[in-house]
Length: 221
Image (cartoon, rainbow, N blue to C red; front, top):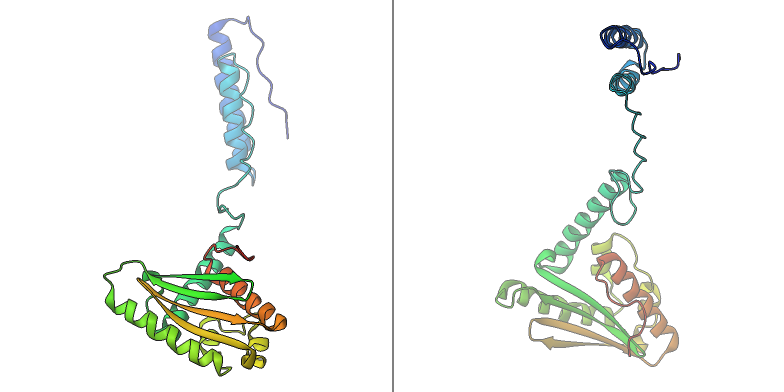
């Protein structure tokens, strides 16, 4: 590609202006005949305009560190949309398995030295429908988990959560107790078996990651 040259200062103003304008039109037409015409024409027009005013062309602005289409987690647009779809699928499957609206309720998963707890509460204490559904669900899973039945987590996640198989195998060593909360309920999980406790922790950590609750992944004393 031919280099772009600025006319030197000090020429006759009328002739100089004519020469610059004529040169700009001719160069523009030449560039537009090439396959990369749009981008080159823009660059040429900017450079020529700077020459015509006797100014130095401005430096190109560097690309931003976070280009468009990247979210705060560093995902590109496609990965972000896949995550949005996965989150929506989890909400729908969770609602079907648990019997209450996932967007109107809040999950928390707590790790303790003896096991941990599953807590679900309503966002609006006046929401009697979801409040009742939460307590029904938690009572059910306390009974089902004690029997080694983890069908509801399987329905919710579409896979076996971490620790689930070991919890089922060691069901006789784990105790599940439902407890009422003012705006929901809790299933407290305890064991004296170190292998069972480790499995409970794996299960709860999986839930924290999948539901994105932000709860600590370690025991908080």
